[in-house]
Length: 180
Figure (cartoon, rainbow, N blue to C red):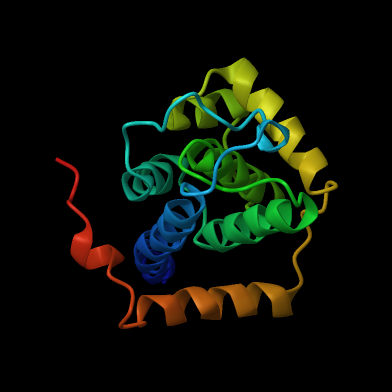
């Protein structure tokens, strides 16, 4: 019975990860066209976009973090809270990777029974331990330490992600070149 539950959870994660990547890629594509202002720069911003695609980065996180599929929905909710609570902050290709590893790590710590330490998540995400610690604190302050998500809000975000995957206007999967 446990094997069936694990297989179902893994299938759900495999379906969620590319959709979340698509949503974030579209957001980054839109926001990358907006000139970056000094007041919108945060600890999450890199000097240049990482070479790894958002989809490949999320797949890496999913593979090595062993977190539940719920963590990826929670990650999106947390990132959305940063956007809502910080009007000058724009998710773009300079910050999306650090936002992802930090939000997934926080979601796993808050929701999952078993999770890894910050140093491990840092290795998974290619971020030094000291930096992941700093990003965690910054993220928590940016969302006012609000990690709780109601069932209704979670269900709404999950539904919207799955609706996005069936949207015929979305070409993220068709345009994606698989990692080698």
